[in-house]
Image (cartoon, rainbow, N blue to C red):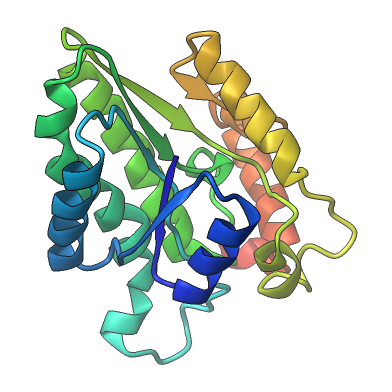
Length: 226
Protein backbone atom coordinates (compact mmCIF):
# COMPACT_ATOMS: atom_id res chain seq x y z
CA UNK A 1 0.00 0.00 0.00
CA UNK A 2 1.17 3.50 -0.87
CA UNK A 3 0.14 6.69 0.93
CA UNK A 4 0.82 10.19 -0.33
CA UNK A 5 0.25 13.58 1.26
CA UNK A 6 1.76 17.02 1.85
CA UNK A 7 2.63 16.65 5.54
CA UNK A 8 5.96 14.87 5.91
CA UNK A 9 5.56 14.42 9.69
CA UNK A 10 2.22 12.68 9.28
CA UNK A 11 3.59 10.47 6.55
CA UNK A 12 6.46 9.48 8.82
CA UNK A 13 3.99 8.67 11.60
CA UNK A 14 2.07 6.41 9.21
CA UNK A 15 5.27 4.68 8.14
CA UNK A 16 6.30 4.04 11.74
CA UNK A 17 2.85 2.78 12.74
CA UNK A 18 2.46 0.60 9.63
CA UNK A 19 5.90 -0.57 8.47
CA UNK A 20 4.45 -2.26 5.39
CA UNK A 21 3.11 1.02 4.02
CA UNK A 22 5.16 3.05 1.55
CA UNK A 23 4.92 6.85 1.68
CA UNK A 24 5.55 9.60 -0.88
CA UNK A 25 5.34 13.29 -0.14
CA UNK A 26 3.25 15.07 -2.77
CA UNK A 27 0.56 17.72 -3.25
CA UNK A 28 -2.50 16.93 -5.39
CA UNK A 29 -3.10 20.66 -5.74
CA UNK A 30 0.11 20.98 -7.78
CA UNK A 31 0.20 19.44 -11.29
CA UNK A 32 4.01 19.38 -11.31
CA UNK A 33 4.04 17.44 -8.04
CA UNK A 34 1.58 14.92 -9.52
CA UNK A 35 3.83 14.39 -12.53
CA UNK A 36 6.79 13.76 -10.22
CA UNK A 37 4.71 11.43 -8.03
CA UNK A 38 3.67 9.48 -11.13
CA UNK A 39 7.29 8.98 -12.19
CA UNK A 40 8.53 8.05 -8.71
CA UNK A 41 5.70 5.63 -7.87
CA UNK A 42 5.76 3.75 -11.17
CA UNK A 43 9.55 3.50 -11.06
CA UNK A 44 9.25 1.54 -7.80
CA UNK A 45 5.84 -0.09 -8.29
CA UNK A 46 5.28 -0.75 -12.00
CA UNK A 47 2.39 -3.15 -11.23
CA UNK A 48 0.29 -0.43 -9.56
CA UNK A 49 -3.37 -1.17 -10.31
CA UNK A 50 -5.38 0.95 -7.83
CA UNK A 51 -5.82 4.69 -7.34
CA UNK A 52 -7.79 6.08 -4.38
CA UNK A 53 -8.45 9.83 -4.43
CA UNK A 54 -9.13 10.90 -0.85
CA UNK A 55 -7.57 14.36 -0.55
CA UNK A 56 -9.78 17.25 0.42
CA UNK A 57 -10.26 20.46 2.37
CA UNK A 58 -13.51 21.31 4.12
CA UNK A 59 -13.89 24.80 5.58
CA UNK A 60 -16.64 26.62 7.42
CA UNK A 61 -17.18 29.63 5.15
CA UNK A 62 -19.64 32.51 5.24
CA UNK A 63 -19.92 33.73 1.68
CA UNK A 64 -20.89 37.29 2.59
CA UNK A 65 -17.47 37.92 4.15
CA UNK A 66 -14.69 39.50 2.07
CA UNK A 67 -12.09 36.95 1.01
CA UNK A 68 -9.19 36.70 -1.42
CA UNK A 69 -10.50 35.12 -4.62
CA UNK A 70 -7.85 32.40 -4.77
CA UNK A 71 -8.40 31.50 -1.13
CA UNK A 72 -12.16 31.34 -1.66
CA UNK A 73 -11.79 28.36 -4.00
CA UNK A 74 -9.09 26.36 -2.22
CA UNK A 75 -11.45 23.39 -1.81
CA UNK A 76 -11.89 23.26 -5.58
CA UNK A 77 -8.14 23.07 -6.11
CA UNK A 78 -7.69 20.09 -3.80
CA UNK A 79 -11.02 18.22 -3.64
CA UNK A 80 -11.90 18.53 -7.33
CA UNK A 81 -8.85 19.45 -9.41
CA UNK A 82 -6.66 17.04 -7.45
CA UNK A 83 -8.65 13.86 -8.24
CA UNK A 84 -9.16 14.94 -11.87
CA UNK A 85 -5.43 15.55 -12.31
CA UNK A 86 -4.50 12.29 -10.58
CA UNK A 87 -6.83 10.26 -12.78
CA UNK A 88 -5.62 12.03 -15.92
CA UNK A 89 -1.99 11.35 -15.00
CA UNK A 90 -2.34 7.71 -13.90
CA UNK A 91 -5.09 6.50 -16.27
CA UNK A 92 -2.83 5.54 -19.20
CA UNK A 93 -0.89 3.25 -16.84
CA UNK A 94 -4.05 1.82 -15.27
CA UNK A 95 -5.48 1.11 -18.74
CA UNK A 96 -2.49 -1.16 -19.36
CA UNK A 97 -3.30 -3.37 -16.35
CA UNK A 98 -5.47 -6.46 -16.73
CA UNK A 99 -7.76 -5.21 -13.97
CA UNK A 100 -7.53 -1.81 -12.31
CA UNK A 101 -9.54 0.22 -9.83
CA UNK A 102 -10.16 3.94 -9.30
CA UNK A 103 -11.93 5.04 -6.11
CA UNK A 104 -13.03 8.66 -5.89
CA UNK A 105 -14.01 9.72 -2.38
CA UNK A 106 -16.81 12.27 -2.60
CA UNK A 107 -19.29 12.87 0.24
CA UNK A 108 -22.92 12.45 1.21
CA UNK A 109 -22.97 16.23 0.86
CA UNK A 110 -22.60 15.75 -2.89
CA UNK A 111 -26.30 14.82 -2.86
CA UNK A 112 -27.66 17.41 -0.39
CA UNK A 113 -25.34 20.37 0.36
CA UNK A 114 -24.45 21.69 3.80
CA UNK A 115 -24.64 25.51 3.59
CA UNK A 116 -21.92 26.02 6.21
CA UNK A 117 -19.40 24.45 3.79
CA UNK A 118 -20.54 25.76 0.39
CA UNK A 119 -17.34 25.42 -1.64
CA UNK A 120 -16.60 21.93 -0.31
CA UNK A 121 -20.11 20.80 -1.23
CA UNK A 122 -19.76 22.28 -4.70
CA UNK A 123 -16.46 20.44 -5.20
CA UNK A 124 -17.90 17.11 -4.05
CA UNK A 125 -21.04 17.48 -6.17
CA UNK A 126 -18.81 18.10 -9.18
CA UNK A 127 -16.63 15.10 -8.29
CA UNK A 128 -19.77 12.95 -8.14
CA UNK A 129 -20.78 14.08 -11.64
CA UNK A 130 -17.25 13.56 -12.96
CA UNK A 131 -17.11 10.04 -11.50
CA UNK A 132 -20.37 9.09 -13.23
CA UNK A 133 -18.92 10.28 -16.54
CA UNK A 134 -15.58 8.58 -15.95
CA UNK A 135 -17.34 5.29 -15.21
CA UNK A 136 -19.39 5.58 -18.39
CA UNK A 137 -16.33 6.29 -20.53
CA UNK A 138 -14.35 3.39 -19.04
CA UNK A 139 -17.24 0.90 -19.04
CA UNK A 140 -15.71 -1.24 -21.80
CA UNK A 141 -12.20 -1.24 -20.33
CA UNK A 142 -10.53 -3.13 -17.51
CA UNK A 143 -10.67 -0.10 -15.23
CA UNK A 144 -13.42 -0.18 -12.63
CA UNK A 145 -14.59 3.16 -11.20
CA UNK A 146 -16.08 3.33 -7.69
CA UNK A 147 -17.40 6.31 -5.77
CA UNK A 148 -17.22 6.28 -1.98
CA UNK A 149 -19.51 8.91 -0.47
CA UNK A 150 -18.87 8.97 3.29
CA UNK A 151 -21.17 10.55 5.87
CA UNK A 152 -19.74 12.73 8.63
CA UNK A 153 -16.79 10.85 10.15
CA UNK A 154 -15.36 11.24 13.66
CA UNK A 155 -12.20 13.14 12.79
CA UNK A 156 -10.55 16.33 14.13
CA UNK A 157 -12.20 18.18 11.23
CA UNK A 158 -15.65 17.03 12.31
CA UNK A 159 -15.05 18.27 15.86
CA UNK A 160 -12.96 21.39 15.26
CA UNK A 161 -13.94 23.22 12.09
CA UNK A 162 -17.63 22.48 12.63
CA UNK A 163 -17.74 22.13 16.41
CA UNK A 164 -20.59 24.62 16.75
CA UNK A 165 -22.73 23.07 14.01
CA UNK A 166 -21.98 19.43 14.93
CA UNK A 167 -22.74 19.75 18.63
CA UNK A 168 -24.79 16.71 19.59
CA UNK A 169 -24.19 14.99 16.23
CA UNK A 170 -22.16 11.80 16.10
CA UNK A 171 -20.03 10.88 13.13
CA UNK A 172 -19.17 7.43 11.81
CA UNK A 173 -16.12 5.73 13.28
CA UNK A 174 -13.27 5.81 10.71
CA UNK A 175 -12.61 2.08 11.11
CA UNK A 176 -16.26 1.35 10.39
CA UNK A 177 -16.12 3.52 7.27
CA UNK A 178 -13.09 1.57 6.02
CA UNK A 179 -14.85 -1.75 6.62
CA UNK A 180 -17.95 -0.55 4.78
CA UNK A 181 -15.84 0.74 1.90
CA UNK A 182 -13.92 -2.52 1.51
CA UNK A 183 -17.11 -4.57 1.74
CA UNK A 184 -18.75 -2.40 -0.90
CA UNK A 185 -15.81 -2.72 -3.27
CA UNK A 186 -15.61 -6.48 -2.79
CA UNK A 187 -19.36 -6.88 -3.41
CA UNK A 188 -19.12 -5.03 -6.71
CA UNK A 189 -20.88 -1.77 -5.80
CA UNK A 190 -20.13 1.22 -8.00
CA UNK A 191 -21.44 3.77 -5.47
CA UNK A 192 -20.87 3.14 -1.77
CA UNK A 193 -23.00 5.30 0.54
CA UNK A 194 -22.57 4.26 4.20
CA UNK A 195 -24.97 5.41 6.90
CA UNK A 196 -26.41 8.91 6.57
CA UNK A 197 -25.01 9.27 3.05
CA UNK A 198 -27.54 6.76 1.78
CA UNK A 199 -30.30 8.73 3.50
CA UNK A 200 -29.09 11.92 1.81
CA UNK A 201 -29.02 10.24 -1.61
CA UNK A 202 -32.58 8.95 -1.23
CA UNK A 203 -33.82 12.25 0.21
CA UNK A 204 -32.25 14.15 -2.69
CA UNK A 205 -34.67 12.26 -4.94
CA UNK A 206 -37.86 12.07 -2.88
CA UNK A 207 -37.76 15.12 -0.57
CA UNK A 208 -34.91 17.46 -1.60
CA UNK A 209 -36.51 20.62 -0.22
CA UNK A 210 -37.21 19.13 3.19
CA UNK A 211 -33.71 17.67 3.60
CA UNK A 212 -32.03 20.90 2.48
CA UNK A 213 -34.02 22.83 5.10
CA UNK A 214 -32.65 20.45 7.73
CA UNK A 215 -29.15 21.17 6.47
CA UNK A 216 -29.84 24.90 6.71
CA UNK A 217 -30.91 24.47 10.34
CA UNK A 218 -27.81 22.39 11.09
CA UNK A 219 -25.71 25.17 9.56
CA UNK A 220 -27.42 27.58 11.96
CA UNK A 221 -28.64 29.79 9.14
CA UNK A 222 -32.00 31.45 8.73
CA UNK A 223 -34.06 29.18 6.38
CA UNK A 224 -35.88 32.30 5.06
CA UNK A 225 -32.57 33.65 3.79
CA UNK A 226 -31.82 30.62 1.60
